Length: 311
Ligand code: ZN
Image (cartoon, rainbow, N blue to C red; front, side, top):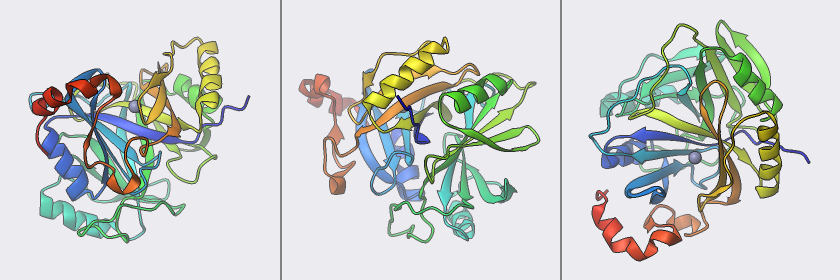
């Protein structure tokens, strides 16, 4: 059967202090806080999800805030090293002024592949970009009193993976995940998924002399690609296994169903379904307002809530 992949689903990173992470992404960046839940493997720490208004796949940045004692990670090979959001044309001046006002570290806007982008880092050192997509972006943003629709983030534009050698990862992108090589600039190879209008780009950067990255505070833990349903996911699982890669069984993440495998370049990939989505346990207008626990932890709610930082 066809195993159509629909670009990015979400990106998950490690943060330090939970309150600082929450404040930065919801207040400064203006993303919607779409889900407040816990790490299913460690219910005494949060798992945060931020996204666009409708919490659509392809807009979702998630964090495990491990607390202020978490040691910082190191950017390097075998890692997703840059995550780019899509913003409207002519919005970068607004964002630079906003970053100045909030003490956010950024570099001057630059251009790659014909697109303007503003690189910056979050309070944990996670490397991000705001890109004015050349292709336009019709996704409905979250709007706040400080970040109106003419400036607001639309969702993901691209992720960049840094690798010792791009060849084997490029094959995974093109043979399993529907990407096509679009363009190359020096050691950066841009791949596009033609099945979706946005969240469609993966860049591979070849950096043979660089050290291997270390995943901890301020770094990306994994990159999730999107499929429409379980049937497509399980067919894709077979193809991944046929490549000789170790792939997990399907895991229920409450808001999507997941498979994980480490691609040959060392980056942890996930395949996540659209179903059931973030409205599985609360309505669209109430997203993110209360702590959501998976069924196995519901009877421990009081103890779990007491251990979590108040936001
Ligand atoms: Zn994930």
